[in-house]
Length: 82
Image (cartoon, rainbow, N blue to C red; front, side, top):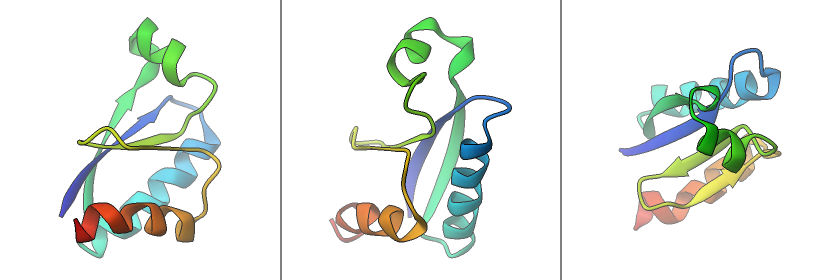
């Protein structure tokens, strides 16, 4: 199981969609994930403010919105099989 980070902010409806996708994958035991609130850090706001939600792996691979559940799974395949 891989650990993912979701860069997010409160009140973001797109972030809520990404959370739903990650919750589904977590229930399937594909991943575990943690949320990072970008508004608490000016550097994160500068990096992700226009791109959230952004999902990142521990290795530094990032997937920024927009993405579908299928695109998320396809993006994860190298991490899961690697």
